Image (cartoon, rainbow, N blue to C red; front, side, top):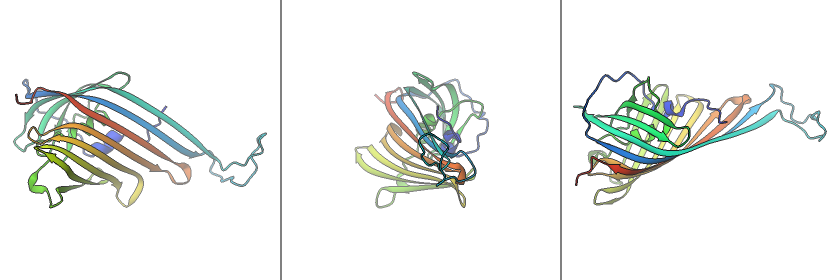
Length: 251
């Protein structure tokens, strides 16, 4: 079983969650995605505070021990993710209801969230919102791609300091075929002063600029937790998303 040191969903969201009061009975449309999700964790722990490296272990093999043990675990699932677009707020933020229907363990009822073009996400703290749902939500803001923010290399950057984390994300439009874009993301999360937890994210995003909708997402996350002499853990998260239905699409 995978041992989670800290919920990655909290890290990826990176914002204080407050109850969302906006409600609406109508919908602007629904987006449906196929998703795959996997977690692989490797942990090294010291069984004793005494470093016995170089001392003979009391075993039949006569091998030496350094007091370290290694553990690992993984989790995999796939299914569909549904986003009901409720409304667009005056500040440009999008109000959505997101839910997930995994084949195995990743299942969550609808949760209300507000998403912004600068990848800010705020979700109802009383509902379950999985890591892979946050992956999609970050790119749903209507002005995620803002031409006024691009430099000569078709690149822009987002820097945030929130919840005791320093976040830096770089985005580059690698190709653009009549608004059908391929965008790369390099994102890092660091605790101020260094800290023991580091998260590095590499993402490839297919994006339909006229519709302001991500059509595919391929995210690879490496999270490292350094506990000093007590041990370390490395967790790899992989998420893919592919748009299969869009009732908001213009015909």
